[in-house]
Image 1: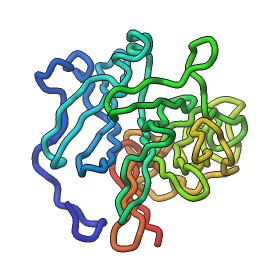
Image 2 (image 1 turned 90 degrees about the vertical axis):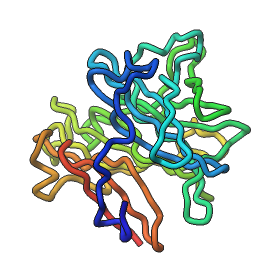
Image 3 (image 1 turned 45 degrees about the vertical axis):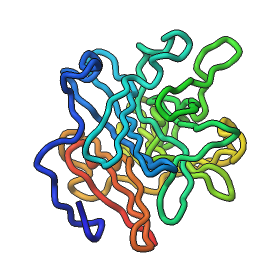
Image 4 (image 1 turned 135 degrees about the horizontal axis):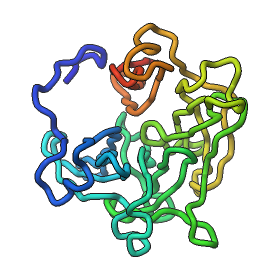
Length: 265
């Protein structure tokens, strides 16, 4: 909890962890990771997170009315296409929101909620209830990439959604994480394996249509705690965005060891 967005009092107990629920097989022994949260029009909360059983990473969903007590609903793609995508590697669910009275509220486009997700290419999924999600597929019923890696650029190996996407007057803004390759495809101006933050813009009425994409990163590791720690190559892995006291607070992981914040008026 924080009064200024910078200094926090940490709750002594976790609010989401591998427990004795029916979904323990997906959460344990690895844990519940990579949370991204949105508010609903009714004032409730939806959390997408990675269920990591140290075999397959699965994008999962939980809901809450108070941010402290969470109900798990299991993998996001549990029921889609008769479970076809249940056991694929899936992470990082960025649900499309709209900024309303300073809050990022999950919003519908063409009668559905939408979510960018994935680690590698970025994919897309839709939902009518924010709990059960259906991946967007191509004519061969294979996952359809919405955003892919680019050779010799900061996102030459992996693109992965960041905070919940935002529907604006110009389109859907997706902040995403880009990993530099560790091969000859890497951006030579950056350390190999480093994670930086990028931006993409999708059509407001057609979430699958990419309109623009930044040619370079807007945030990268350069502070000591961002380039040392569990992940030595360095990360500014963006996951949370909050509008508070007329400023935007962007929260991100630093070298998989700490949480950092960048502020923009």
